[in-house]
Each structure stands twice: as structure tokens, then as C-alpha cells.
Length: 430
Image (tube, rainbow, N blue to C red; front, side):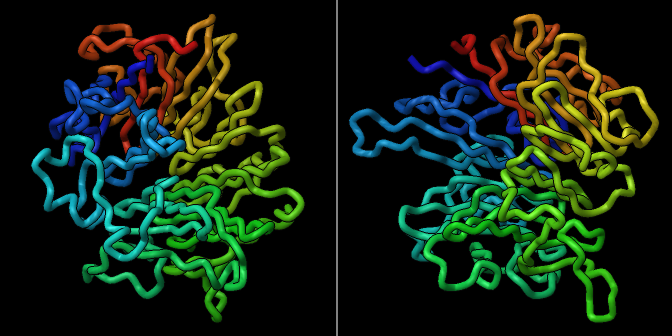
């Protein structure tokens, strides 16, 4: 029997991006509502199998949730079915052209997005990854025997869509855009796959594999070097690139030490190599790059807008601004790479960075808990207050019964722009 899973959220909610059914900030973790689902709070519409949450991403005021649902045993399909649900602000087209027109459930409830691939002749594609800039959404489209495609939709400030041309205030009327990488990988390759995608407020980076060779491409804001050293003929740093540019990570050669994952802050970018080493590009104005090259055996990376976070087998390391307690340790307003201060015996299993706060799934004394710290102006740490938190505190399971009776083990965490999500299994996982 499948284990029921619930999604809870806290934080900024002015456009309904928490899917709580209203537009009020949530200062404690509140059940998310799913259109058409039983009690509106589980991921199992009547007659369908429960869904697992693959990822949650958010822009300024919109949310995308990528779900995986097991197919009916009687179906001829063997792979799980992937679905994208969304909520919040869709006025720039970032949630698809049908989102505003089909708004019977409102924008404060997660609902399956009707996306227009087939209207433009793209039949049989599955969405395998999602990412979001400020008012822009990205969808990786996958189909057996075909190149992966990257669709973008929404706002185009600073060239966020990745489709060239100068950003203007004029609305872009296309239902969606396909980002072109042929000038980077060449036109003769047999197969192109997109292995990872990340987006900061206004820049995006993808990892590409064309046949047996890896490429890295990025677009959007570039003034601080977050896409590498892009310069005009005059030598002046380019403020942005509206089309993808190739990114070089020398002195590390990605042919010998490929990149496994990439993450974006506001003005910097992080790259995790197969060796466990880190490459970084962009601004170090807040100390967010300090000490990163000394890290070894890194297993996972993420960024706040002005900070860098690295998980090793032994600890979670942080560097950058600490003005709102983002580094999780008692130090100055900015600090080089060092460990986040958890209670003795804590082991970080997973973590996620928001704009200026962090959530971590921690194993401590045989229990799986969620701890959080950093900026808390919107109540996004879910502890009932609006004060910033300088040191990690336990935020799940809650110490009070303010979650509408939902209890259970956290199986996933995600963080956004003043927003936080926890997926809770109602039974302890085996």
C-alpha cells in the first residue's frame, strides 16, 4: 500500500504561491491544497495513485511542483508518469497560457498545468526537470530517440527566456520558446541531453551532454561574471546575455572531471565536479566564494542569493553573507567557508537553500527532523515568529499542533523566495 504524502508550506504568500487557499503569509507550516484531490491536501486525486514530489521550484511569486505518479497496473506504460502542477502569479505567462483563463480553482491552489507543447507539434514529450527565474519558468522536455529540449515561458527581464534579442517591456506573444543550443554543441550531434538546470533570480545555467561530450551553457545577467568573463569589444563587462553562451571552468577540465550539478545564486554560480571539487563563477562581494576551492569530497551544493553551501559526508559548509544568520553560525556579517553549527551527532541527509534561508533534513538521535535558519521576515521558517534565526533550530516535527493534525516524517524539503516546503510521509519510511 502506498504511503500517503502531504505537502506543507510557510512564508511569503502574496500571490498564493504557497497553495494554502488564501493570500496571507503563513508563519507556521500549513497544508498545501491540490485541486481535485481528496480533502484538497493530499497528492491523490480520486481514482489515482498517490504522487511523489520530485522537485519544487519558485520564482518571485509563482511555484512549480514536479510530481511522479505510478501508472495504473493495467496500463501498458511501465514508467512512472511525471506531472507539473503550479500556483501563484501567472500574469507573465510563466505558468502557461491556459493558467489565467482556466482559473476556477484560483491561483492559491496547486493545479495541473496545461502546457501547449502539442499545439506546436511537440508530441510525446515528458517534462523531466523544472526551474524558475524571477518571473520565468523552464521545462526540460524528453522523448525517446530525440534531443532533449528546453522550453521557456514568462518574463524576459535581462534575457531570462534565453531566446536572444534585447529584453523590452513589450509582451512576448509566443506561447513558449525553445532555447537553442546548436551554436554551442554543433548541428551534427546525434543526441543532446540536458542533465541539470538551475536558475537564479535572473540567470540560468544548463549542463548539456552531446553524444559523449559535456558542455555548460548559461544566459541572463552576466555583469558579475556569473556566466564567465563576458565582455564587449570595448572591454566592458556585458550586463547580460539574452542567448546561451558556453561556460568554461578552467583550470578544471570538464573532459577529465565532468560537472554533476550546478546551482545559481543572485550574482554567482556553483559547479560540483565528479571528483567532489567545486568550481565557482561570479561575485565574491559577500564572501560567497571564499574557501570553496579548498573543499573536498563534496556530495551536494546549493546557493542562497549571497551564499554558498556544500554538503560533505561529515558536515554542511557555508560561506558568504551572514547578515540575517544565513550561515548558521555565530560569526561576522560575512565569513569564509566553515561548518554550520548543528547539535552534536547531527547528520545532514539533504538540504535546500532559499533566497536567504536554508532548510536541512537532519538525522539526530535516531530521528529524522527538519532544521532551518536565516532570514525569516515572512515567517518562512515556520516557527511562528518573524525574527531572523542565526543558528539552526528544529522546525519539524513541530513542537505545537498547528498543522491541522498532520504529523509524520519529513521526506523532502525545498526553499524559495521567502518560502519553504516540507513533504511529510504519514507513516515512517521503511
